[in-house]
Image (cartoon, rainbow over the protein chains, first blue to last red):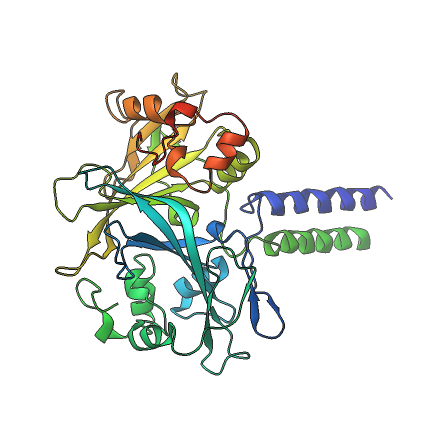
Length: 194
Length: 194
């Protein structure tokens, strides 16, 4: 009986240790959710995933101020890419657009409100092209996969690793090259072929 | 003996469960490390913490291209701030500077190589001002706390919440205001008083 009680205490301690070491306060796993077939449900709290990079004025906006683009990826996919140079099933990217602000006659720019966000998902069992793109606008709760006329062309032709712009992700370029998944034609000195 | 063996198995299972549920592949907890008193050891893998925002040309750089600034914070501090509007002990911020690149005669800018990074740490037991600032350059393994002539003035006078520029962190402004820790004088329409 004493040993059983000891056992229970040990299990409790081990669970606490598991929760404390490295788990922080929030879950890190994320799987894309769907309703009505392939309609994707808006991902929650993607700002807590792994951040990959930002750009300013990347979309050829006509406004002089432009918008910031922030790129996030699901943590599990990030670690898998570092270890293999490949994206696993259920990889989700978020492209977040935020307004930019600046001071008159100054060169500095900083981020303000969310404008809209898009998702890119890998799921070979759902999509013949393996990847799909979703545009959630500012506040849509769900989004259907985009038609092939939207996002596909650039991503499939110019993404350095399997439809993704790894040439623009400073923390992942080395892994793509190490594992030979990175298309060398797309490695200009300034990643200018994005 | 059998019960002990059972106990060992249960502990193992519990540890695995702890590691699997929500932990992903990487540790999320981070405590600042020091050597020789208050000399801070370079934080590893801070790119996997919580990203808060980016700016371009924020430091008044003289080059026309400027540099990007990316801000990260330790995950535990992020969740605590969302729940309380306050920064706990051992909060660590990283300010990462990356080169910017662009195409000739185009307005787009994207991030390339790391230039340098700085840390800001809260530790009331170590520092009379509660917070300290560290400059790691590009590759220093350790850094001593900066003198009060560097970083302090701006952060202490213009940080919207306790020396930190929450006016520039879109995902945290609301929490600062909700819990009344946000200095209203520093909430200009364009956060221009940063």
